Length: 326
Ligand SMILES: [Fe+2]
Ligand SMILES: [Fe+2]
Image 1 (cartoon, rainbow, N blue to C red):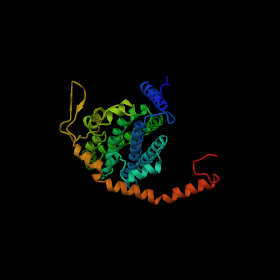
Image 2 (cartoon, rainbow, N blue to C red; image 1 turned 135 degrees about the vertical axis):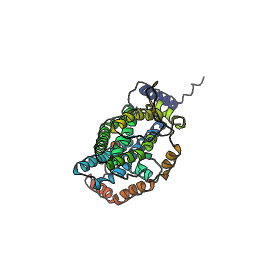
Image 3 (tube, rainbow, N blue to C red; image 1 turned 90 degrees about the vertical axis):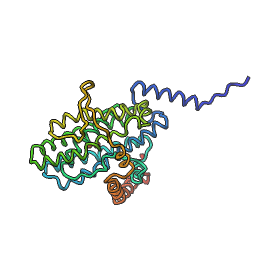
Image 4 (cartoon, rainbow, N blue to C red; image 1 turned 120 degrees about the vertical axis):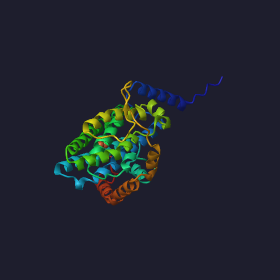
């Protein structure tokens, strides 16, 4: 009798998949050298790259105000904040590299519009009050999104998020403090704050992505432990956190339907214009072209720095490519 034919590769793959599933189910971390399903790796690279791109592109709207900050103190705060965002981008590109992605390639994909970044950064910053409102609402929304990611199933991503979240909470507080100061100022300053809130409120709610019934990847990402809550859950958490802060600040949120549901304790909000989100994500927001053109210029204008540093590293490593150790 012939011995049964065993497909060794298939058996190994099944065992590896079981080990992966058990690790995720036990809420332990997957590390770079662990086996992982190809879809998990691809989803993570896409999500981490999109997150990294958002940090880097997100430097632009506020960076526009660095030379026009109203005082040395405000300039120092804003500079620190914008530099933090650059650092966040760097941690995240490093996390993507542990999955086999190449940083320069990810940047090229961003510039060629093959990868996305957060829709929120495609809106302009019209006054200094926008700096405060971005800190309060945009960094506040980022915190709601990112705190659960500190428990992401992928180790390097989860660890990067812990430090990022600490810095995001500083960002939110500096924004709120700036707005409190302006609300205690002149009627013109108060009007600037209200105008900025009116412009940023709805785009901030859109930051959480499409509604759950139009978010096809959510179920798989939650099963993999990459995502911990749905878009609508996080959006609700943000609204519940923000409404009382708006009351303390003395601004009106531009939504006539906003009302406390006494039974659930949640603030109910009016319908979101999803066509606007689709338009902005597909490249047709007020600032998409400017954001990408600047990122492209930064890459091209600074290519010589990369070339010089690479040549220097090669010279001092005895001709081996940069990053390769003896
Ligand atoms: Fe950030
Ligand atoms: Fe931030």
